[in-house]
Image 1 (cartoon, rainbow, N blue to C red):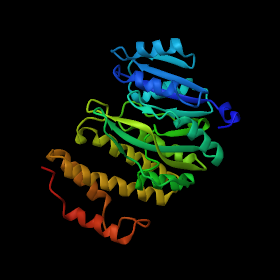
Image 2 (tube, rainbow, N blue to C red):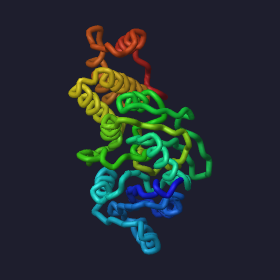
Image 3 (cartoon, rainbow, N blue to C red):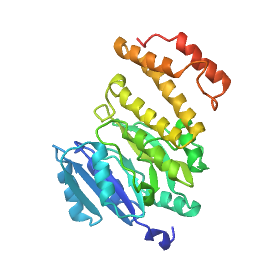
Image 4 (cartoon, rainbow, N blue to C red):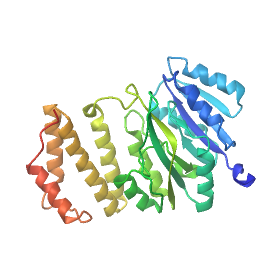
Length: 313
């Protein structure tokens, strides 16, 4: 990489909460990046363990690290606190129990420069605590405008709706923050950044290492977090409808209906299943405007209204 490209500062925002066994690996992977012009914002979200203290020890040895201590407010508030303090040309989110390949940020900023991209997403590997590693994302690279990248986010496993495998031009975040007090905050947020983008690039290299652990924030039962996900999808549909984006609205509606079916199949909570079934039925009918959905898929959606699968045993 040329020296010129090191002139751009990347603000790396790392929320910290109850991850004392993982934060050292996470921070080490950042301070040892081959790209060195970094502003590292470690946001201690009122963690009751030693995570914040470990981050402070790192900050004593590396002046690029700033530790922000705050009362516990949840992941969205921690990320927003980082955004409010960020001064970089680019933004990158890294969860405190995950880590990066050494050349991740260098290659992401290089691609952003070469393609004048607003967002560059990289591949993701799932890693288990026993050392197993498995690619999660597509092996096919791609370059899209903002609207097409949203369709990719919905239909493929490349861009993804997560916040943390992407390098963002910092200006995209003007006026956008994560919603507080809910799960699936990424689903409420990332599509808005893609929509604002002129160019989005996906590179398949699995630079982001995504730790799989049952005690994480997303480790709860499907039915317990499903309603938040549905609300995020409704929020997205309303956004596209308000902006006259019928194709994006219909793609989001299709995802919404498929998720209702998934919840119905996976849950044995009869009360919840009835609610989800009624919601599905209210959205699907012969008079429903599915103008951007292929006719075979439309018929399959209508058929499921009358013939539903039993819950998983």
